[in-house]
Length: 549
RNA sequence: GGGCGCGUGGCCAAGCAUGGAUAUGGCAACAGCCUCCUAAGCUGUAGAUCAGGGGUUCAAAUCCCCUCGCGCCCGCCA
Image (cartoon, rainbow, N blue to C red; front, top):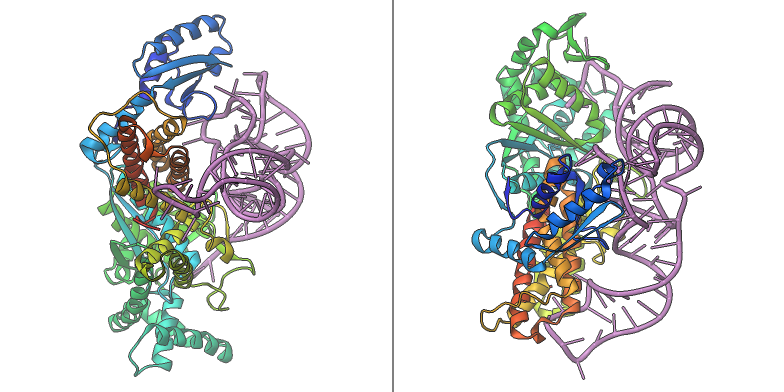
């Protein structure tokens, strides 16, 4: 995965000479107030008769390590202080030779990340955007740790919602050129029409024809869906999200692959009045085929996953928490019934609510992502104009808007429901993308205005704030591994904020331009180290680089 | 009713997988800091029965059980 100077492993190996059971998890990096690196030895020493003796031996070994400045034992914790020049070198050497820290090996596994996958019946709203943002960041994270990643959008072009969209166009705007507003209008009028007539018969007939693989109908629906999908892709593009592959659900009906699913599951299928189902242990009957022979959503999803497993080693899907059970069923069918040994994993997120309650497109209470983006852009533009007047840069305002929106929906654990509040979304202070971007802008400021003198670096006098910054920068590979292992891009978001805060403290504490040459030279390198790592982390979470704020 | 998820200062979150040293941040509040590399920043003060109860353990925000509150799911829908 990564190649970097691993101080924790070196320390652990020394400890292992005395206590072989000590594992990587027992070592902690950067617990404020104690050592730079601490080892929880309590569980191994608490019942040991000669604990003091073992501790003494460990301390002696650790103190001989070149990169260790001091070590002590308190409350059965081994606390180790690292010489900052070694941390500095570990970072600088990696960045000088590879341009990054940590350096990464390409992994052989191909990973698919499916996200968004919303029915193309309207523009992207902020609830769905949470899905897109989590999915896109997850894909970038997996890429950073060395996987070959492809992002996927599963386009649901069958089903009632899509048929209603098509029906609305045919009924209300047939001879007009189909545009997004026109289609939306037809869609809304269709639901009104259903209410007024009390019947959805016309759409049901369309669904039936569709399921019977009526190629003329399928291609017509696809045109309409395609227009909506283009709108969604454009919305995604404004916040820096591009999806690699779009797969249309109707293809699995057209190619007969849903039929193949039934064949491959034939041993596990049971019959009920002509319909077919599998019995999932501990759950219930899951129907895969109606008695009229047509397929169901889960059948097509199985076909889709069979397709994905033919291309990828690990398939990840970002879906709303209402799909938890669906996910469990899919895993059971793919791994236990169809006996795939590849990994299927789901990332679930809770929905975004409004202070006034739930979002609903039909009730007109959902907030389009693009309107939040526009508002953010407008507000940051006002701020930029206050600072730079005529020279305020629209492009910067756009980057602020996109980054802020992404960060706002990414920084929390996806399992927590989010209540969208305009005042919070539009806040540029504190734990926000802007404060991270601000630290990057300050880096540009320093590097433009302060230059090094000579080539000598002082490697002795590190102020506390610089030591802390370097140590935090050094933590990056461990955070990446944590985040990648647990599929939690929000870990990187939290880290990026911590790192930028630490940089700002260093920046406020030390006036680099006024330092003696040899210290100034080193601190400029420290700034470049910070720059490299914060940009790396921001790339993952979708915070865009700015030169000036 | 059953299943799953969530509950941490006034508000919003981190930490929980792998139990361990004084529970970490942000917003809001209060008191300070710009003739100085960008104050969208920094420093300090105040604020926590980690929903409640029980259990396991030398040790529980973290693991187990119960209760309460909120959310989601329980279709031959998607």
